[in-house]
Length: 88
Image (tube, rainbow, N blue to C red; front, side, top):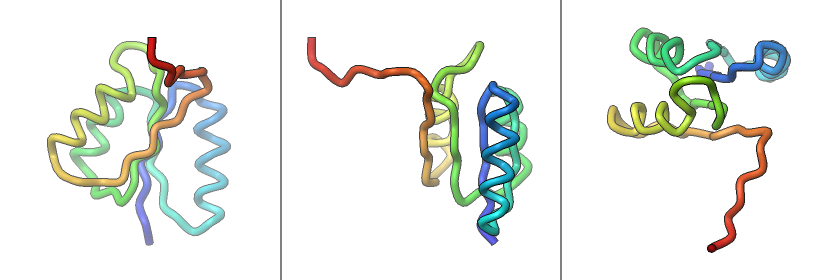
């Protein structure tokens, strides 16, 4: 079974995504902050990280850098915000 770490500060979204992902047969550990994600990442082995881009305090980008420095793992950043890719 694939183990997924889901991080988002919106509890309703975490609840919905956890349900949907588990319905597909995956195991999900979820949390709502950088600190919670760090603790879970230390205690469990994950095959994929799904992480919110914008969170209070440290961001999803901060968590990406923490995970990146510990090895290779697929990492998908989620956001409800518009991010511009235009050069200024």
